[in-house]
Image (cartoon, rainbow, N blue to C red; front, side, top):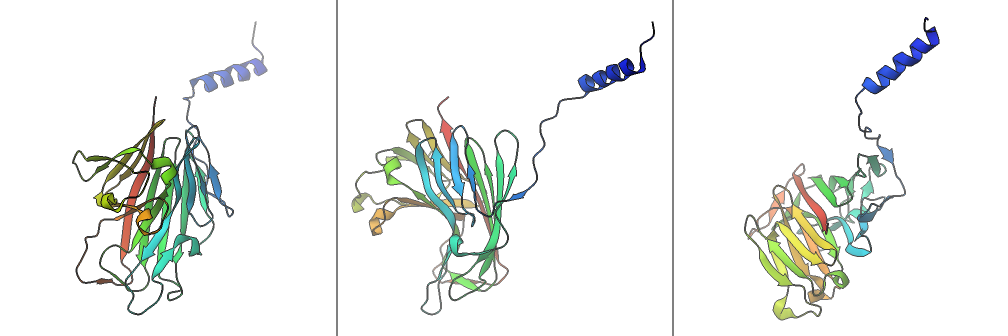
Length: 269
């Protein structure tokens, strides 16, 4: 008995389907999010503003980072506000988001930093990968005008809420060393003021796991307690390693700075 032409076609398609290797879904295309993007996952979540500023970084219901943004300050030759804020930058297009595999997303933003003195002081690009247990950051900034400083000019500023970190044990590591152990005080005491530079890893013990801030190549963390000058929490500045100099150095237009870091929530298994 001969098989019909229709049966042969169906059989051939079945063979092709079962013989084909299974492939993971490919990453999606970049999409514009002019109103910002909200990321949620099993553990980490955050809100990405249209400017690229990131707020409300949480591990489930625990607020890890209040806000996180690109910031800059230089040594002016005359009296004026010599600061830059990502929130006030001129935006070069919309925030862009791309869906990756396994609950991960890539976020990209670019713009031009400015203040009242300089309408176009430096251009920047920000690249972030959001994952259920970590967030990876990479920044690149290029000056468009000469800027002077005794040390770094540009950094990523993270505000860490004291309500989360008070009375929590933490470790600071510099380079390959084992690191120093301490506890964030609930009440500020200038005798035990926190001002640490050159840090390559901050690890804090929380109820559901460890909050970890670790740097990439040529990147360091400067940690301080802002209650020492009227603030309300901890501040972590992440930036390219640039040593302090006695005399200010003027960086010409076209100077490039780059740094990278990871924010990890090492949750209990």
